[in-house]
Image (cartoon, rainbow, N blue to C red):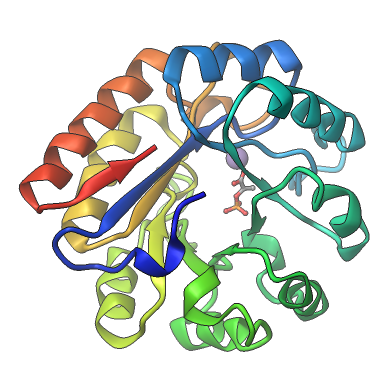
Length: 256
Ligand code: PEP
Ligand code: MN
């Protein structure tokens, strides 16, 4: 498990590269992903907050059993979204870092429960939240504080319809200057388009981000959610290598 308190934006600090599919779809999907990428920081959603109620909602509890099974023979930290406090007990068996999604940043009861549990939390920015609203939300997790909360900029809503959201790199620079929080970037949801992910990821490194959260799928065309923004495994490995090279020039080591 990565030492979160050791992650700071200065030369020599670790850079966290988290990747995986938007949704966990099957054991085979995750097995293939792990084998081909050797990622030890894996993301995958079990409970999905889909905009449309008739879209795929995630495997839910079935996914918990799949991850528990895979953890017997593979060493990885599992990052996954919790959408409701009632999922906490079961998810706690398999989730190493909880993701609070953009739609739940204001769900203060959920944040209170996560504070009580004490495990690291990635708090995504709501798509219209100001930076102070985002930081105020962190205050519902006082025991986690800067040591165990990781902020994730995932794009905000703008007037431009050509891409899904607008990546606010200003926020990364500003938060690194004014707070002690770790700040990572999710370029996948920020743009919604696979071809835009790599350039935005590299720009995030230059802006001083502490890590990246990237969506990737063994067969993007067949993904049950967010197919258009998923990198295939070849693209993911290429991006990871580029990020490693870039970080090296800044004296930073990439953990993946
Ligand atoms: C996700 O990471 O798959 C996700 C739903 O992200 P967000 O909450 O940023 O929309
Ligand atoms: Mn997604």
